[in-house]
Image 1: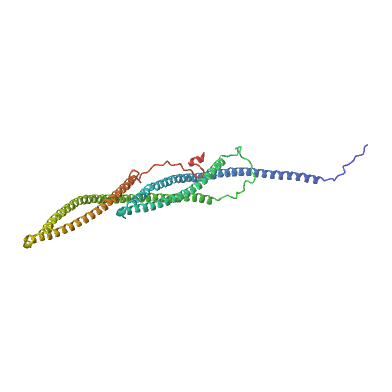
Image 2 (image 1 turned 60 degrees about the vertical axis):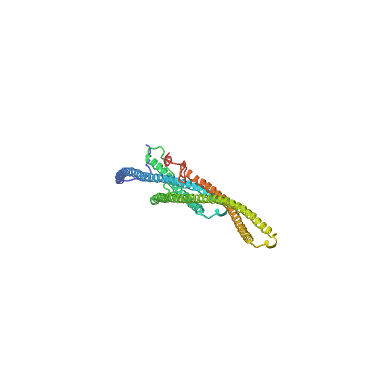
Length: 427
């Protein structure tokens, strides 16, 4: 019979065996209980996290929608402000061009006034007078030079204000571009779902860029851009009103001065015409008087020669009667009559010679004055010719009036990005 070999191990008792079985059962039951609790908690956690995730995603979508509405509202406000800014820039540019035209229009009046002053410097003698025409022409030059300075200052101010408006336009354009990009990005984000192929995990998605702003600073930035643009537009509007008023006032001043100068020139021309006519009348009368005086001198000379003949006759008679002899050499009535006749003839000849000398002297004075009057008449006619040329020169002001406005085609303004319409930014 073969020998039985027992397993060399620790032997347990039946109670121990039973205890072990009970322990295994209890442990299994406990683990199942724990597993059940974990399952219940897992299911609750899955339900909670699923609801939380869906709710959070919905809230994020709502926040995105609200943000899109805010950005779109500011975008519309910026677009409206930019549109008004463009209109104001065009209006200010037109006003500046009108002022430049007004400045260019002053060149002709200034040229005409200077030319008239230069023409009237050609007068000579007593015709070279400092009359009201010269005074008005000098006022013309002074006024026009002052107008040109004022208009040039307005043009310079308008240019500087256009630069301010252009800067504000650039800020609005930049802000508007950022708003459009943000709208595009947020709209894209709002359209994404968990099934979108574009989604993926990113590296450090919770990082905050250094250039990030807060909602308050974001609003304040756009508010500042709009307020700055509105302030610049308000300044531009006041500037346009001032420029239009200044142009109207300057135009009235220039037209009033032009009328005063024309009136003074016409009055002076009329006075000079009267003086010329008066001088011509005096010359004619003087020439008539000179002719009559020459006739009187000739008659005086003839009468003087006639009296000399009578003197010779009387002298001869007296001389012949001295040849009487004896008692016939008598101082009779004839002798006394001849002596009286000779005395009378001597007095007459002396009076005639004196009157002839006076007549010749008067004739010489009239001839000299006649020569002076002819010279003065020549100067007056030359002065009248210069005045007529001055009036013809000023006639250029009526053919090309200062108030005429030549339409100038406007060049479309562009903003700082080179676009002429904000709607192009959306393209």
